[in-house]
Structure formats: C-alpha cells, structure tokens
Length: 121
Length: 153
Image (cartoon, rainbow over all chains, first blue to last red; front, side, top):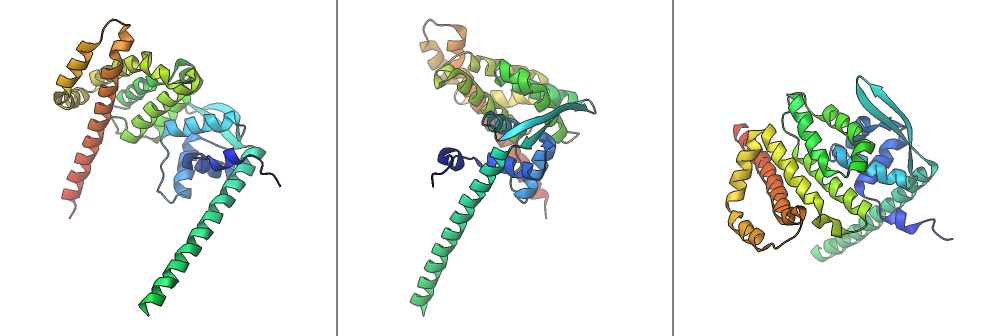
C-alpha cells in the first residue's frame, strides 16, 4: 500500500508535533497551547510565542489545523484552533513512526547490553 | 512596567513582514504579554530570538529566497534595536560593550562598501548588531544564573 504523504509524515518539527498533540485534547487558544505543550513534554519544552504562531500558520497552510473562532477576552485577542481530520491522521502517523523508532532503538540497546554482559562473564 | 515590555515586543515584531504583522501581530503580542511575568521589563531571550527567527523565516518564505536577506530587513533590525535601546538604556550599555571588539573590523568593512542603497549598506552592520545584541542578552542571562547559583547554598 502506498503511504499517504511520506514527506509530511517525516518532516514534522518537534514544535509542530507538540502543537498537534496539544490540540488532540480539544480546540484551544495560544496561551493554553503553550501550557499543554509544556505539560506533554513534562516541562522540557516551553514553546516561544512566535514559534507557536509560526507553527500554527504553517500547519494551517497544510490544512492540518483550522481556525475555529476569533474573540476578545479581557481586552485580549484570542484565536481558537482545532485539529482537522488530516491533522489527526498526521499525528497518528507521526506517533506510530516515533514509537517504531523507540522500539527499534530499545532492541539495539538490549542486544548490546546482552553482548557486554556475556563478555563480562 | 508592562507598558515598556509591550513596546519592546512591538519593536521586535517589526522583524515580521507587514503582511504577517497585520495578520497575527496583535494576537501574538497579547499572548506574549499573557505569558510574561507581571514584573517583567525586558523581553525573555528565548521569545526575542524566536520572534527574530520567525521574522527571517517569514520574509524568506514570502519572497521565495535568501536574496531578500540582503535587503531592507537588516535595516529594519538596526532601527528596531536602536529604538529598543531608547526604551532601556541597559541595551545601549550592552551594545557599546559588545561593539568594542568588532568595531574596528566593522568600520573597515563598511568603508569598503561602494555605492548602493542605504539598506544595502546597512546589511552587514545590521546583522552584526543583531547577533551582538542576542549574544549580550544571553550573557545577561548567564550572569544572572551564575549569581543565583552563588546565592544558593
């Protein structure tokens, strides 16, 4: 079977992946997205605001996400974004790709560990 | 104080092309203010760098090539940084310190520039200024972290 779009599945930056993952929990706005991304990465990644909006723009250009609403809350402009079906698919593909890598690397490490313990014995 | 920070972020957002700035500038500015601590005066290094990087990225994307980087952009960066230093004199102090070493080399390069538009002439010094300000901001963070670790028992 032919893969849907190998390029878009392979060339996803960490920030794009985190944004998609954060949106998987439901539509939300920029500030909340940064908080969710930080939570998902267990505090490792705090997306800079400019990177977030740049990523949102690029994901929107590829129809992975969509703008749901635009409103003013407490005098602050807010845009709410949501995952499209395409974005959902991309997130699933990317997650599968990464978990395949994790499994493969873990197997390699197990093998080298086993080899070392044989040498030690 | 947050007024100063807001203005600082506004100037940094000048690195965006006008189209991008009108498209998402105000939303981005509001989010920037939302994520900053209330007593914050200067932009966070990471945020400042991200804005400039996004600005370059957008300009390259919208103009279909790196050729544009030699044009008006660096001129705008210089103006933005000078305006920033008006807001906070510490930037100017940092700038002058950072400029001391490479100043001679820069003057030499500028003097070899022949005719051309003002923005062309500003390209190299603009880039140097930008890099040095970023470096200086980094140094500031490092100094603060070091001081904090000294105070820690």
